[in-house]
Image 1 (spheres, rainbow, N blue to C red):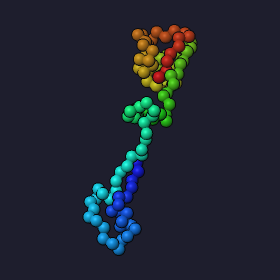
Image 2: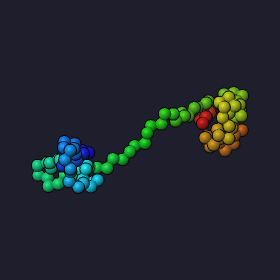
Image 3: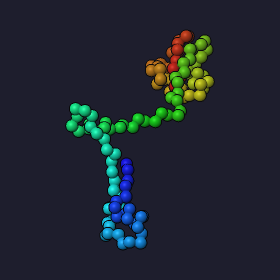
Image 4: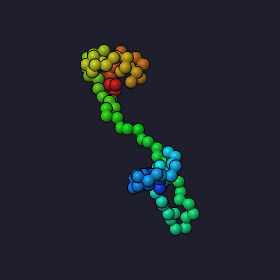
Length: 111
């Protein structure tokens, strides 16, 4: 955006001792858009596409799902306590119908 002084404002800067013609506030500064010539073969310039803001990247990465392989003697409660999560969260993350029926070598998702 370019602003230019009108003749009345220029008169005040260059010849302050002489009275200026009556001015309105809008005549002091006029807004001019930079001139752009249409490309060859075009009548009017095309409108610029709207800019869609993209969401800013999060500074905290999404937590990666950990996996745990059930070993001999493991219980769901012990696994939950070892990883600092609630036992119900492990049940939901793994769609366990019977939490007491863990199999040796079963891989669990730890949320």
